[in-house]
Length: 303
Image (tube, rainbow, N blue to C red; front, side):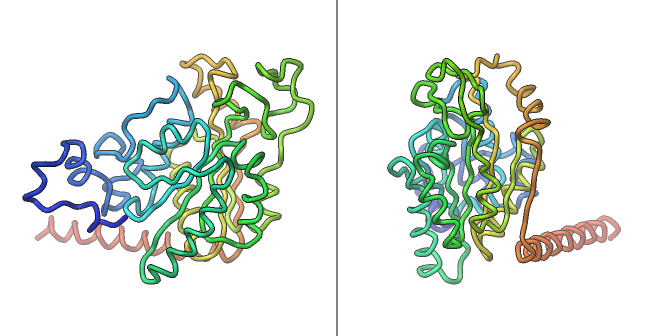
């Protein structure tokens, strides 16, 4: 993907679907986060506007926030696997690669390496988004090996704590004691320590979050992607409840997310010294640029 690839000539626009033309003209491509970021959701053409996921699904909400938080959506590729999330991710106007169950991190390893070789002078971001089953159960070995090898891309686990796409089986990330349709007596063992595994395996930036604060969520996503570009593997463990399998009324989905923020998904942000240096440098440069822009506007008003 690139701006050149997706932008049609003016003469050809009238032959294209209206949605595509609006996406090019009013979408987030080539724009700053100030123009088309989470703070302005609803004021620009988003790359994800429709999906077939369940009503009230927190995962669908997070995926929408994810796409709005991308620092360079026009140069981003997402990868996933079987699971609820791919129903929405595949509907976005950002390239999506759908792999065999659990191999998204193996594919992302090769893709991110290829991008750096093919486009050494450009920033191409690779992000995997998969459920707890695809990331920590069936895809566990490939997830771990990509981290151990220090692959430069971001892994996001959409943790709904169940195999919601296949009938309600327990997963390694289901909490101990959870009673599910296919775990009627309750899960027997504890939830896997995903963030600790990520740190041990070499992730340089790790976040655990319940996405109730849209700005904090977007900031974590952006930091993870920017650090992965330069340093190494980054990981976001996000709570995305399955209101169907856990019988959460639609109107209480966000309340549940806030409750989990005080429990299993209390906010945690870990970074290595090298990752911290990258974050401080980039955010410092952005702060200076905003200050300079604000100063220029004041001068224009005065003149």
